[in-house]
Length: 147
Image (tube, rainbow, N blue to C red; front, side):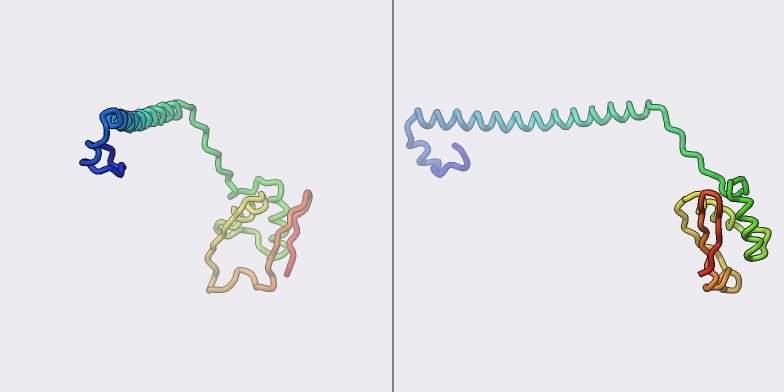
């Protein structure tokens, strides 16, 4: 007898044989469908595992793309290097860079995103706040501006 039927077990036996047989056949078909659903869900899980395994094997056999080569910014081989050195000497009177200064300036002038955290001397700014420098690059010139 179906669980969701409004008939009780006693009243189910009171209905005629043909109705009872029809309800039993429907219940059997419903149970068969539920069994098929379970079998299909199991088969679906097996196929998904097989698919993932095949894709993983295929991906592992693909040639590896070479890692992008990092650019070395710690040198004076860039098109702006001579002008940068000249402007640093003219503006600050310096002829040598502190650790990582050249790398940071080259990366910035190469339009790379940079985040820089550097130590300062005696808790002072490397340059006064009113001498904040902006490096502007144009096609042929780099200029320092005071703000």
